[in-house]
Structures are given as structure tokens and as C-alpha cells.
Image 1 (cartoon, rainbow, N blue to C red):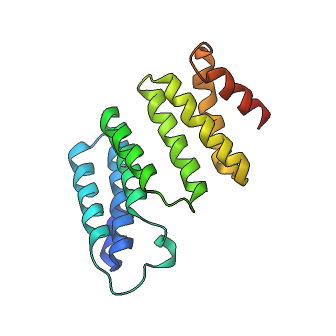
Image 2: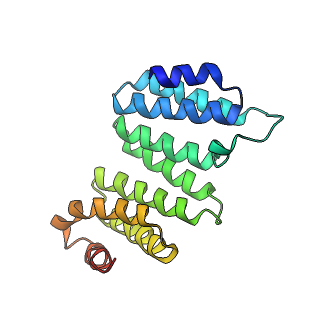
Image 3: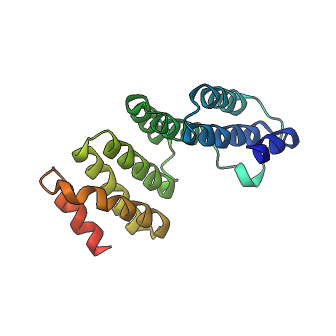
Length: 173
């Protein structure tokens, strides 16, 4: 956390500050620190909405409301609120421009993980299959690996809708 706090004292661009607050929120969520996480999420949202006279620095130029929503959802999932997590992840995925196909595949993988954690196996299988299909189509090995990491969680649910197809798709990838 100290590194993020130090970085926040040095960065002046609102998009960069938003991303750093978001990373701080993710860290607090991983530690189960709900109140501090939610304050960091609010700061990230505030900074992302702030006007900037200059373009975003290259290292964070990709940051958008869709990224903020999805990572906010992942924070809520870590904090034990899967309903809010699903809502935010779906909202963020819906806001994503079509040109960011690789990011969409990653977001769908996150969504699959969220559905798994809440026991919605058929929805998890659908999201994972979509992510894997996109990742294979565009040649995104990181996303393929993210989906493959989820596959063991599906093996005990072979009778759930979409799971056999996902397992076959994963074997073929």
C-alpha cells in the first residue's frame, strides 16, 4: 500500500490517479477491508470523472468507466457481495467499446469466475465459453490461460448446462 500512497502523491493526471486508487481498492478488497476499499473506489470514480486538460499518460490511457466498473465488481466479489459484483461486471462489460475484444474476453472470464463463486454454474460456463472462443479467435494466450485456470472448478458439474461444451472447447484450445 505504501507504494500506491507514494505514487498518488506524485501523479497529477486524473486518469492516472483513478487507476492508482482502483489498484488500492483492489488491494484493500483482497484484505477484506470493506470501508477503505469503498473509499478508494469512490476516489477512483471521482478522479476518472474529473476534467483533464492533457491526454492521459500512455501507461493508463486505456482506463475507462468500463474498466472501473469491472474492477469495482471484482472488489465487491472479494468482499463477499456477489450480487453487486455481477451487476458491476456486467455494467462494465456492456460499456466496453467493441474495439477492445481482448479486454472483453478478459472481462467475460472475470464474470465467469464471479458466477462460479456464487454457484451459477450454467452462467459461468456460458461466460467462460464466450471468453475462450473470443480469446482463441484473436490469439489472446493470457485470456486462454485465465479460462483454463477456471476449468477445474467445472469438472464436478458435468451435468450443468454448457459445461460439457466448455470442457470440450478447453481441451481443443
